[in-house]
Image (cartoon, rainbow, N blue to C red; front, side):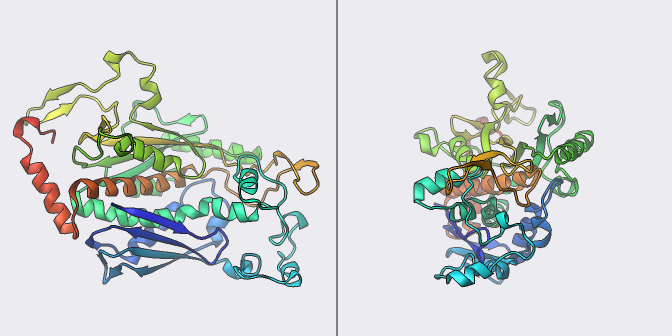
Length: 407
């Protein structure tokens, strides 16, 4: 069983992430994880924070000389902006005079970092979090609810992706399929396992060049209007063996686990496997993937409508899952709210933020899919060392009767 936890606040000294249950022998380096963190900052429409804030990675445990040890992998991502926040976010009590002095130079009073945030922002966790945990302001809520936390999950996802490659040859790729109303044509070919570098070089992480240009134009128009944009990302997994997950219980179903993991990403409001909601509009004869015997003797599905899962299990076909991201809640034009300190109607505070973070959401979704698939692989094949897992995968494939093989 693979387990992962993260800790830390958006403007705290660091984020901490722990991955437990990973076999020994997985080749992974600081450079691999740092590269994944850099990918999370990609995309046209990002805010100023991505430019001046750096991810300072440290591997605290579980890896020696570039190989995992079988013990928990512990990672730390330092916050380069911490010196500016160490009074406001101090874990120890702070004198009122010291807090009053911990202000932004030339910052408007309503957004000074030491000012209580009593105007909950629509679309954020602010008000519900204040109600749940009995806070009188939103700072303690937004610090943990922030999407900054996803950096820790991207770091862990890089480790999980390395395991998947080395244990069973699985390759993941993510891309943007829609920004607001601008979408990749339905007939466009999906990216392949080797297209990640090309995607990362595109401002929208979109392989379809005309659509990418239209997406950039949409972001520019939205920025000019003082608004924000959402969109849809897709993750594909190539090389999965059939049989990951199970139909025997609801919580063992691979599609359910993937959906839960993706819905756990900040701002994600919908998930679909394969053709998802479009499938619901079709008749049954046009909704499922018919099978046929290929020239090499393997059983292959003629279409990929199911997205690589049937009955809660991987089929061995390409896994395809999409996640819909809502427009960023911090809207420049300022949405209506209520000041909980005064009871008066007001507008939400707006600080620097992204116009569109959908391209980055694809990288985060890719990391979460990697973690879920790595857990499913270990559940099915086990192994204290990655070589043992790989042997078990090979043995499983080799033991499959010829007439039942789908690869």
